[in-house]
Every structure is written in C-alpha cells, then in structure tokens.
Image (cartoon, rainbow, N blue to C red):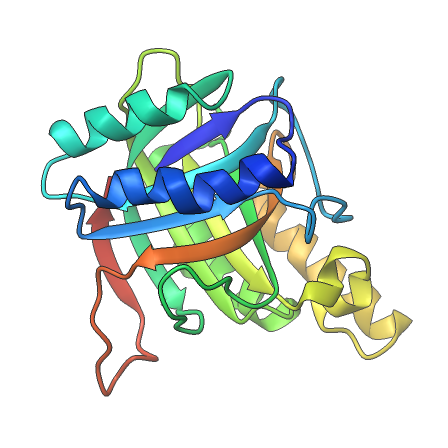
Amino acid sequence: MITLRGAPGDEAWCTRLRTDVARQLLATGAPGLTVNVRDAAVTDSLMTLTTLEPPVIALVSMWTPQYYGEQIRTATTVLAELCDQAAAYLVTESVPLPGPRTDPGVRTPGLANVALLRRPGGLDERTWLHRWHHDHTQVAIDTQATFGYVQNTVVRALTDDAAPVDAIVEELFPIEATADLHAFFGAADDADLSDRMSRMVASTTAFGANENVDTVPTSRYVLRDPFPASPDATAGRDSLQP
C-alpha cells in the first residue's frame, strides 16, 4: 500500500490519479489495483483526524507477485511525482466484511474511511493483534454502519522515509456518514448513538486505536480486482498485499 501525502489535490488531480495514473500502474501488469482518493465527495467528512503533516490525501493498493519487483518500483516513482511524499508499506490483508463489487474504475458507493493506526509502545505485538483482530472486529461491525471492512497489518515499510504506521484500516460507510454521526454509527436515536460510541471507544482504547491515529475520508475505485467472483463471495479472505 502506498500513501500519498501533500496539500489536498483539486478535482483535476483526483481524477488524474484514478484515471491516467492508474492506467500507468495497470500497464505494469499488477494483478490488482485500488485507488482511494480524498476528493470533493468526501473531503469535508466529520470523521477526519490528522497527525501527519502534510496529511495523507490518497492511497494506492497494489497486489503484486514481488514486493521488491519492478511493479512497486514503478508505482513509487510515478506516485512520488504527484505529491510531497509517497511511502510504500508491505501489508497482510484480512477482509472480515467484503464490500460490494463494482465494475473497473467505477466509484464504490458511500464513504471509504481509511485509518492509519500505531501500536502503543507499552503493548506487545501479539496482544495488540489479538485485541484488534479477535476482540475488536465484531464490535466495529456491530456498532457502526459499516458495509465493508478491510484490515491491513503493516509488515514493514518499503521506502526509507515512510512515516511509522502499524496498520491501515478501510471501512465503507453510507455517504451520509460524512456529515451525520447517527448515519456513521447506524444509530436510531441519541441514546443508541451514545451506547454505540461508548462501546466503540472502549474497544479501540483496549488496543490503542483511540489516539495517535490518522483517519482519511476517501472515495474508493477498484481498477483491477485480484480476486475473481465466486459463489461464496460474501466470505472473508486473507492475503498478502504489497
């Protein structure tokens, strides 16, 4: 996964990233490619949190046979020309809640909220992963209006100047969630909202995801899906994704 940091791009920049630039990356033959970009449809989301300066304004996910191969070298070179900093991370991908399938290049419905997480220094990796994956996953699904959920655990950075990041999470929400907390949490009323938020905060606090977090509102475009549709398309999946 490659993060792009800099001043927020205008709509022409956002369009170029998901069209002309995406075609350059597809031409490398990468089996899978997704572009998440902070464009006009989502940029004013209430759920935006920023610790990095400059902030993350887009992310590109590539599935490749080799994380050290020409495809990733080409991608980091091309993307670095578009922003102040492009940083690549090798991740393991888990998908407890697959989102809807779309035709190549068609915007995925709703808001794709991407969170960059850091493991607290006082929490060992095994405990952190267990609390996040085993304890928190169902809480996140139950307390939010999530209809797509992808958990990427960072194995290591692939570029020397990459900011410290331990996980990159993507959750899909209704577009109304950009401006309405009730819509974000799927709450029926204020009491339900308070209960859902309390459970969510307690769960994220247990593995340190309540602080030192960046959340980036994006529109999601799947340019090439590396996983063919199957009769059991609603089942979760795990894969290694650079």
